[in-house]
Amino acid sequence: MKLTDVQFGEPEGASPLQTETLSEGLFERRRSIDYVSGTETYEILSDTGLERHLHTGLEVQFSSNERYTIHPDDPNSAVGTCAWTMRYSRQQWYADVSVSVTVSALRAAWQIDATLSACDAQGVVADKTWSETIKRDLV
Image 1 (cartoon, rainbow, N blue to C red):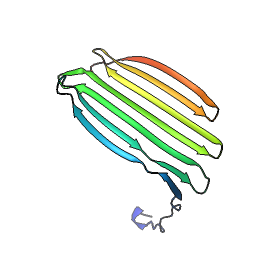
Image 2 (cartoon, helix red, strand yellow):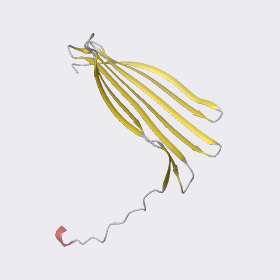
Image 3 (tube, helix red, strand yellow):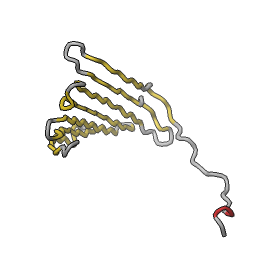
Image 4 (cartoon, rainbow, N blue to C red):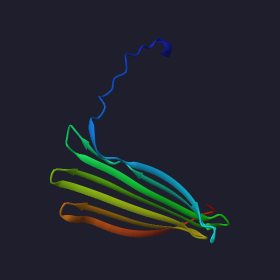
């Protein structure tokens, strides 16, 4: 049998997820230049809005904020910070996870600083902060 002799049936797929929009989301991108210092900044703001999954009643929302700065004459001035938040809830149940990571370009290394926080309806479940330095190795 040759591959050209194989016949496939009609594609199958699940029905689209049925949701209710409880609040609208947003998406923005911005670029700015500080004309005094020369530093350039690029930001991305994103939020899915709050949606309820009708089959389970689960409410979900994802948001992120990314910010990148650099001076065009100094590659070692580059700093990128990304922060993400994921929220889930259903009736009395609630979970919120927030993560933030900053990467800074140093002359010989990348400096990475991060935080993670997880909460439920009673408060903080986990909270962690850490830092790492990674050699740039010509990067």
